[in-house]
Length: 510
Ligand SMILES: Nc1nc2c(ncn2[C@@H]2O[C@H](COP(=O)(O)OP(=O)(O)OP(=O)(O)O)[C@@H](O)[C@H]2O)c(=O)[nH]1
Image (cartoon, rainbow, N blue to C red; front, top):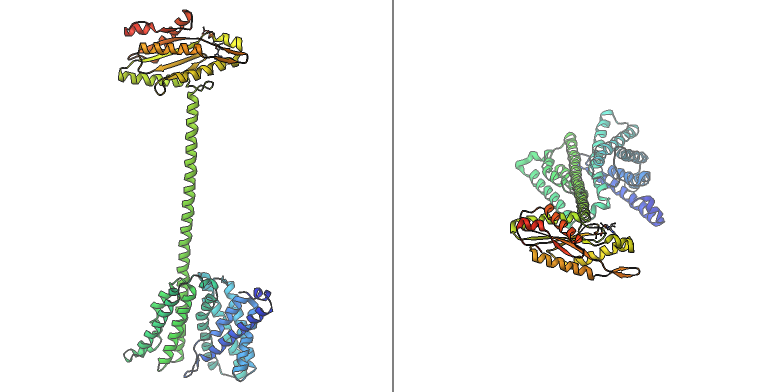
């Protein structure tokens, strides 16, 4: 809540803020005065200074209004009024303002005191400055109005300084943490109650210990140190508001327990008690902020780790996709490198690979393998008479016909170049090869080739070669080629068998 935001909402929120803050300062001043120890006339703690610093930290210079008016209200309504009280109020106002300024100057922030820098600025900067300025100006005023001697003034200064300092160190962190709304969000019932139960239990145990006749000496200042383990444990809790509340309960409580129980306590011992309270509170707050910083660092590391894992997963996915695309492209290129652009049939390279593969298999199985070379007759004339485009159409039409003709899965047909096609027939003997060649020849004769003016027919000459074992592709192509040229020579549109092979293998001619 900021005063300017409140004021913008209308006059009533502004008046409400005024009454609420002035009332708070009034109560704080009254409580501070009430905390005087009757027997020894020592002010135990002065929380009014802490409220003043808090008002300045939270509301800026507007804090002057409640700080001055709240104290004046107490002076006017609760005690016989003296003019010097106004001076005290003004000095306390300036002291609180200086404390708040020091807090901001040293790196404090108004929205979060859970970090180390704000806590150090508050506990070791703002509180000391407020206490010193308020005590020194108070003593000057007393010196002028009451004509006290130097020794009395020194005692008053020290009492004043330490009661303000203890009040500041205990209550400033408490007020800042408790008034920060974020401190209360999501806080479980257990997290609210457990620290208070622990603080209360520590005080009860302490009460019994310092009252025990056997432990009479514990009634002196070391009694407060009994609370140290509990304070350290509490300071390691996560919620700053609950940590400050429970620490203040224990430390103010133990101050009271000691002063109420102690039979004899002098100024020195009492101030030592105050200093212990301030030191324990300050150290516990530092410890608390270090725990929170560590938590924050771990959370940030966790987040960075998650971000890194996410980035790595995304990059891996991208790389995997790139690899898949590259593989698909390579497969496509491989496919293109092995097919004929015009007919879509496998090309000479694919045919050569296939023949070599079949020859190897043939070597092992001992089965015969047939290779057919099919060449279109007078194809030059087709191009010359009907045009090159029709020539291409003829090649494509025959490509489709050949593809349908071969035994799917075993036989293999390819365009070897120009008007020449190759057939590979695994596990086929001479008779089967000649039969297939004849079927090819007859099919070609009967397949009409379209051209813009109508249709025409072509014929093919076929050379057949058979391999039984230990033949090379060159030998087979050579024999089929010779047979095919013999078919051309013998009148075209016919099938011829490779004689050379027959001589090698000793089988009969077709
Ligand atoms: N349209 C077309 N023609 C081609 C293609 N490849 C080769 N040719 C032609 O095919 C013809 C082959 O002619 P030749 O080698 O003399 O043989 P041919 O006219 O068929 O005569 P024979 O084979 O002796 O019956 C040439 O005119 C080439 O230009 C092609 O992809 N498309």
